Length: 81
Image 1 (tube, rainbow, N blue to C red):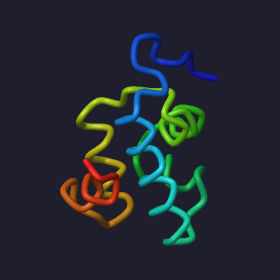
Image 2 (image 1 turned 45 degrees about the vertical axis):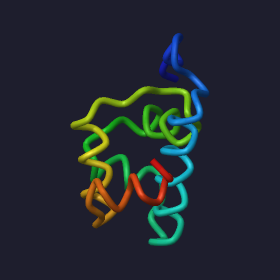
Image 3 (image 1 turned 120 degrees about the vertical axis):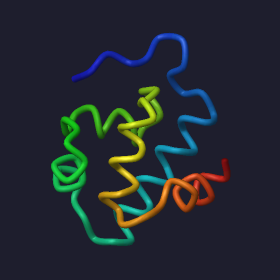
């Protein structure tokens, strides 16, 4: 299991992003493991992102959005960011 991002874990922005990713994944009926695979991200890391424990890099977020067939703007809008 990845170690939580010590300075930013549970930051409201990360929690909102994680919730948006999780909801989009569920809406598309994609497992967390499949989304991680499509995003080229470790499944445990994806879990941490969805729980707001990680501060993912821009490229990782872009990969997740693409894997969800969303633009970054759409994903950010879903997160209210």
